[in-house]
Image: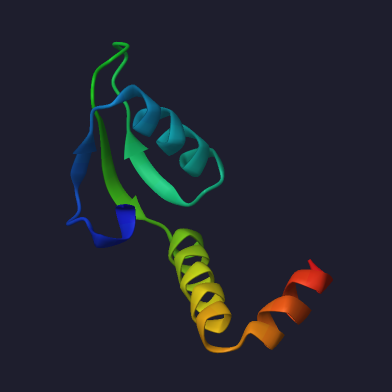
Length: 78
C-alpha cells in the first residue's frame, strides 16, 4: 500500500503500474515511468491531493467502525 511505503519505491507488477497511471492522472502521486512495457515504475511523491484522499478514506473507515448509524446516514447521502 502506497501509504506505508518509504519513498521513493518501485512497483514492478503490471497491474500495480496501471493503477499508478490512474493515480498520477488524478494528480494523487508523482511517478517516473519507463518506456519499456513490464519495467518498474518509481513512485517519487504523494501529492497533497493524494494525502487528503488517504486521510478521507481512513476517516470513513473509522466512522464505519465506531458508529454504524453515522455510516448508514453517510451512505444515504452518497
